[in-house]
Length: 155
Image (cartoon, rainbow, N blue to C red; front, side, top):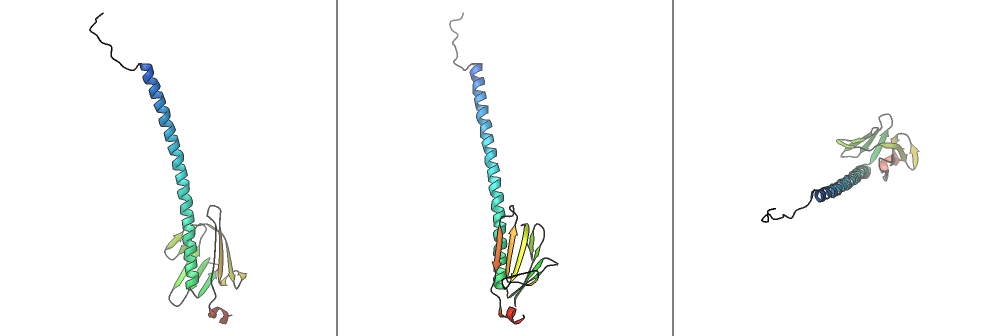
């Protein structure tokens, strides 16, 4: 034996394999947790978008109901017409969305109830609207207005 040869301090093959195994387990767990967090964030984003869309439709309807003197509903075309001396605004209801002029609200409406002077009606002039969406749609919208004097004169 050569006495001048020095032993080099190093890890054995078995020790390196154990380190690689533990590292791969930790990295695998980290990716699993990351995937779960991403799924949660996607769910939160989806719910936030739906509630935002519902609130935008609620706000738009509330503004138009309170700015317009007359509101009419045409049952055959599923169309609401908001009229005052300066503008005319229409809302069309489809299966999975609502169209207002150039805006589209992607909210499926399950049930529409329209009212005039506290009584349910099928079409004609209205003063209140109750929209109910599916569970996936996010909730309910109820808007109303005070009737203009022309509503009472025209009766």
